[in-house]
Length: 424
Ligand SMILES: Nc1nc2c(c(=O)[nH]1)N[C@H]1C(S)=C(S)[C@@H](COP(=O)(O)O)O[C@H]1N2
Ligand SMILES: [Mo]
Image (cartoon, rainbow, N blue to C red; front, top):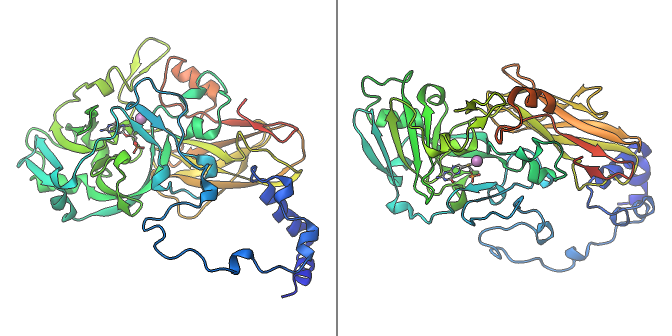
């Protein structure tokens, strides 16, 4: 094939656009990008085509390319107790909406327990007609369902309460993942134990969920708000849960703050009132400006963030850049995402990818021509309830500055004339 002709055939503007698009990858140095002169030469046989490749089963369990070794989970800080720590998803380097299992953020309060699935049991008791202990085999024999949902730690983006932290998106928004979860509906499990026992019904009952880890993570959940959606899952993106994400069993409460998604799930107890556990009193409550505490703030409010370009990236040429990011809401689907490149003075609609799932990450994209001037790029999500992602000033006015959790304000990245992107 004569590459000279095909290169000449493509309209100059499109070729240029493609090249600049690649430059937007940040890590791409200008010297590594193909030049127009390269495109005019005939293609050589690739060195990798001259020798046989590695054999099949070189990696019985596949691993990423060695050239992607930088795309890993990272922690924002050193944690005083090693087991009680978190690691964050590298959002800037991911594509689409599904988080690979090996990059799903981790948050453990007492380390990752080692649980043999044959010895694991799930107890369902309390106000139910026939309390029961389930083995993993019992659970696998029940009707199941797979659904895509995001998971966000309520502490995510807490770094920005007092203004721009300077951190990259992995460390500001990386306590966020989106997986396809497979398991049994909570409602199916409650049917298996004969249903709720009097005087408890779905409208007044609460569910206590407890983990089998050293932290014994325990949360009370209002049955009415979770019954329709909650899943007890054993699989994540097609394979069994990873140990760090709750193997062999966890609770998924779509849209609710991360900590309610109890990992290493060993017990579900139907109770008549919230138990006021450590995780809903000393932790995971927000002190408001008026001195009262906001308790049981379960739903994660609508939020969005631009993942590319984002801090750490550098724009290397004037012209076209795609802007892309993620939007999600704990109250339903994403209705629209708007993008601004002038600090919020003007907004325009971003495109939303594919099927928009309930309580799942949605990928948005917008086109941008960077003229080389200083810019400030922002995104703003609106969800199916009509809720609009607030500015930081609006959020602070509503919640004050003592809150640690549920920070969902519009996030701005500054683009300097040098092309450097900063969280400033
Ligand atoms: N048993 C147990 N469940 C737990 C936790 C824990 O420490 N122990 N951490 C919670 C918190 S705070 C979050 S944000 C999510 C994190 O889930 P992941 O590690 O799978 O991303 O799990 C929740 N479930
Ligand atoms: Mo969390």
